[in-house]
Image 1: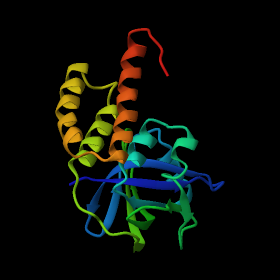
Image 2 (image 1 turned 90 degrees about the vertical axis):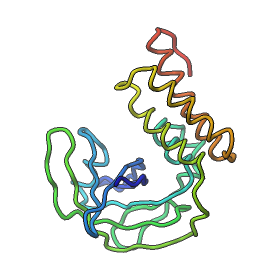
Image 3 (image 1 turned 135 degrees about the vertical axis):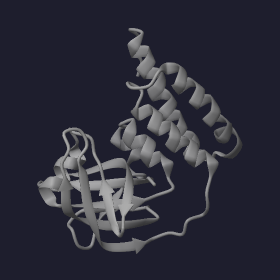
Image 4 (image 1 turned 90 degrees about the horizontal axis):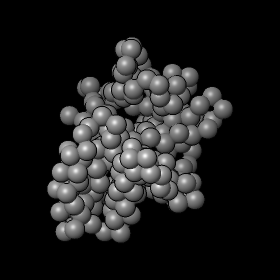
Length: 197
């Protein structure tokens, strides 16, 4: 089973990196499998630590994926120092766990980083499941694979996910959805030789 999280890591200079990651659990350990090359992979190998953030604010997923300008995300992606590993967590996350690297299972394409939880904290209660949030996450996955999937599949899936958006989305979900739709339109415009921003 894969769980959608936000992984925050730092490089040796202390610069934070914020990235959506689907993680797995292996007993009590967290498995992160970044593709090569990856800033997250480089950071974890260098510092031996990271932070797993659990959030229901889908703008963080969409914003990180579409590389929104910092000013648009300054409140969403605000970070605070963690307690033990000199890293950062999202200030407004529901919960976070500080992670320590135990084992690297190397692979030419996608190594597995086995991480141990060193501390866990809950910050806010979970309000419940929302279909629009799930739709944004699904569209974000599709956006991350635009270069791999046929356009017909992207468009078909987008139309289906739009139903949940129309019925259940709040302002956060609508903003995140708009960023992802813009990314899709820009991708296909560039393929056609047009350039929009």
